[in-house]
Image 1 (cartoon, rainbow, N blue to C red):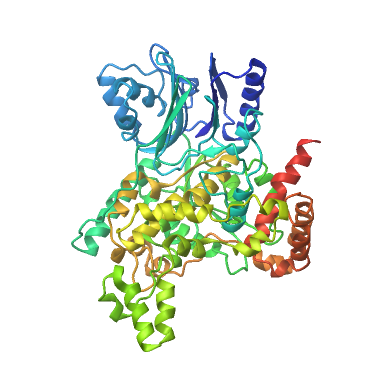
Image 2: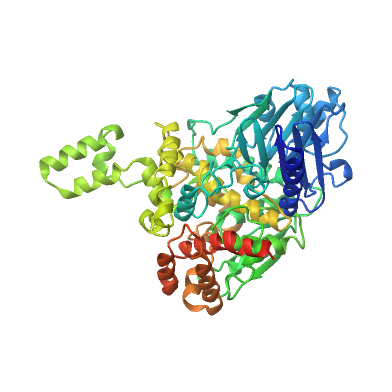
Length: 622
């Protein structure tokens, strides 16, 4: 787990020197254990290291092949590196380290640069850049699911890239003008949807893609996508057995490290199951929980009881008031505005975890694979409608409403006729579009494309036309909210605190298996993740397995009404936000006067934006 960055193309020498220094400094929090730079004509590669596998100096990056004609920087972990390494050594390759990442160099040699084949041989999370000196070619790739981030700016044969957004923007080599459409989408969702970022000139390399640069040209290609089509399963038991067998194997793989490993443990199904399976391979493993004693969202007591049953070495971070007590410390290295409030809790338990371990497994991704959210429930269709092919249902209801005059039929038709992208949008946004637009000045509104995000959703749904209805929605989840929110949260809040976060549910083998399973095995009678619940019930009982989902939430809404410290902090940040030229000051002031009545998600969005653009600017100028 590390930070990577670099430059490709002809930049002025002084500009290159300043950019390399800026990239190294900006990514220092991702790699507190060391840094390295490779530089030659037209290329510079920067690496900051968090040591997880091969803690010796041999594991320092950049890494090289035998004749030093290939140079690699990599962020992530490869869980099948030992098998790949053994095979390559048998073929005559000589390794200079025990690093998992070095296998990429030798695979590249062995496959004569067949990039898609190389990438599809890797199991793990990664983002890397490989410079081929002989071919004068730069090869960049991101893992299948998008667990590890990669951002870049490309213009006229010149590339600037990094593991995070802000370092790219701060090189002084790219267009760092703010994209107001991205800010509009940020207020809608709590994060900035890929492939866009806060800055017009910086984009995200999408998951499952690689890019090749050579002779001043760039090409981008997809090498993997979630397979289409469910398979025929004979029984629920067969499905459960298949998931259990693979998940156990995946968890075992994710425990591999040369440093101590732990788990995040809430009261939920996902983290409880991961911890239970980790204990089978690693008895007494450390587990970590965030707790809000006395609040409805508190999961501390249940998590502690689970830890006791599993005999983990358990730790709890308790917070009783002042929601933003260490906000500035936890968010000081956030690379663009990010307003998922549970990130603050994750940061706190990551800081606690760092005192005991260096790697932590989380349960992220299970909801997106197995239909865990309430919004995954399919629209209710009357029995008579189920007998009619779905493609004809709209016309039948339209005719029926006209002939009978029944408003209920027209209402049903209108509800079912909402386009998939719009329906997804409605269920996932945290604020209404009209309310979000009211936050912007009249000048800024003119630059906002309010339809950009829905067009992206429509395009993703179109790719899965005719597929299992639930899996279509889960596919879009995997391409949007999972990467933009959950994986960004996991990556940033663990890295800021010097911990590597791993997500076993998002191993591509398990993703492929999950998408081969039809909806009937995932959701029943309004309850999701049936498969995982049954696996957990075998280990920890049905009460925990079928407990009502609360999510990894915090009591921010309550504290905005009754905690003086929380309210004071928010009002200060709202006042700061009113200084931003693109924000409508009157709207912000109106919200500040009735802060307890404003949705917590909106409040947190304003606070995070103010912190990123105002507080950090003030601190950097001190």
